[in-house]
Image 1: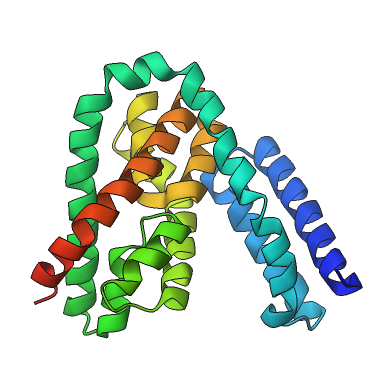
Image 2: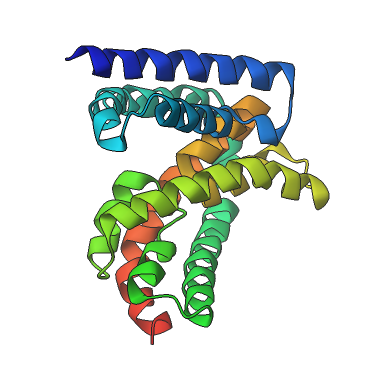
Length: 228
């Protein structure tokens, strides 16, 4: 590991810690750590004239930690397993409907705007966690790199705007809020749900996983139909 990679990892960790402390002091969806940290790191890389290609090795090292971090989501899920089991059946029905609606609306909106087939395919999987989205989009002729950008953008937007929209429509139930955030903004939304409370975080984790499974099953069948 070279010195530049070490510097990028160090800066990323420090920036995220600072962003998290900011979100704790200023409680607002607009201070979501992933959003503020992303903006600050982009500014830093630009000022230091560090290209994205130079930053990639640091990103790959930090990506390794996603595995343990994802496994750690099982802890709040286990602690709140009773409420999850109690509402699992209606939740799964809602997730199926929500997933179909998300895919359909994204593709139809892209078509209405006259966007290319590649963008339509990427938009269809924007609400799914990156590893699943990148694999799934290949089967419908999409571009994995573009898909990754869509997934990250959708996750940040969902984490920022999701709580605001839920507040506007007066949805305060922890289970419902976690379900909504996990469904539309996968891991990034789950991190925001974790900040709201343990139930929200646990339910969002379940939603993120189930949406990935549902999308993997129905996408090859539904996409050719709505793409006509």
